[in-house]
Image 1 (cartoon, rainbow, N blue to C red):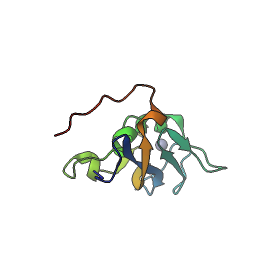
Image 2: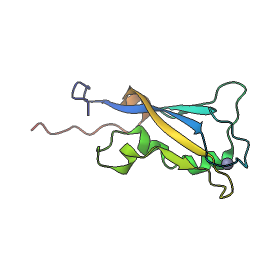
Image 3: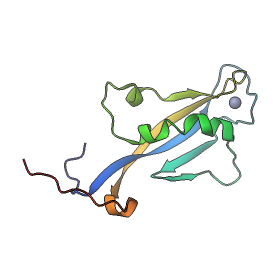
Image 4: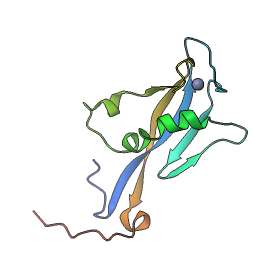
Length: 119
Ligand SMILES: [Zn+2]
């Protein structure tokens, strides 16, 4: 955790999720190197690329965890690859943590912060 953050700030990793090489054939319309990026709550896909909704559905539950700072011993810190949910497709999606981005609580939530006790 970054100790230089102001009291109302927090950090999340930007993520890049890329179609990685596979050992077999793809069933879906994946192309090695295709990707999307996630910054905060915003997902972006480069112009001209597509990403299957079924693969996206498999990835979505993991992405908020991967955005957050995690213990180095936590599998979320070390594991990067997610298989395509189609059991006949050999595509692997690699989740890469990119730079950390600082967010300010009141810019992402209307719920006020509770005052913290000083130790
Ligand atoms: Zn697939």
